[in-house]
Length: 238
Image 1 (tube, helix red, strand yellow):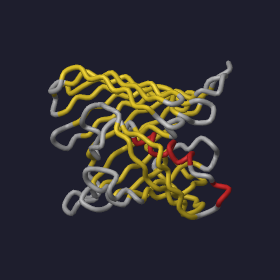
Image 2: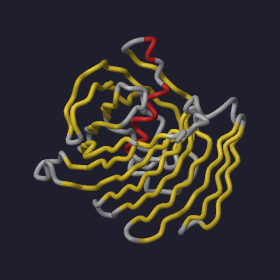
Image 3: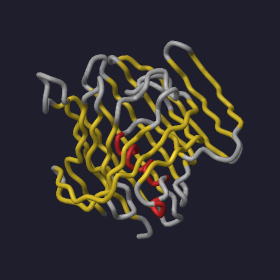
């Protein structure tokens, strides 16, 4: 067999006063590393907080972890919201979306080069994105201007459409941490420099991922008005 797959579940909980530790959602994901170097990520995400969100994402990455294509289907408040299909090529990003409110939308965005990362809002993807940080530079901050999201909403509950932006990643260092799925050697990062990049600035967001080249999500915590936490509940490696 020329491929390997990681399967897991992430638990979403609240840190808000009076709701500490309460489950507010969940995510089931598969990441398959194929023999040709391509990675394909499937993620089913559920956010229980009203209006509830159900998101299904499939995204592929090339051997250098550049996004190739992505599909997103959204349900918000128990109503169909939209479905989008994106293709990201050298010099161009394309999207075809059908949205409940706006109907069919076509985007063709000319680029200087390639999109370095496409954020489609699954939490497992928040860890995979950290691969773009150059670890050879050691702890510090790096800014990435050539990025896109499938929604500028912090819950990823709009569109889906292509939204261009840039943000920074801070590498804090190596740690050994324990989560529900076990004890792991981890890399600790922080998403930074989002001011002016989104309609509403994203609160501070710390993420821990595995230190094994797979960038498997282990733990995350968002401050500010969101006050949420994410943790790897279980994992199976084929």
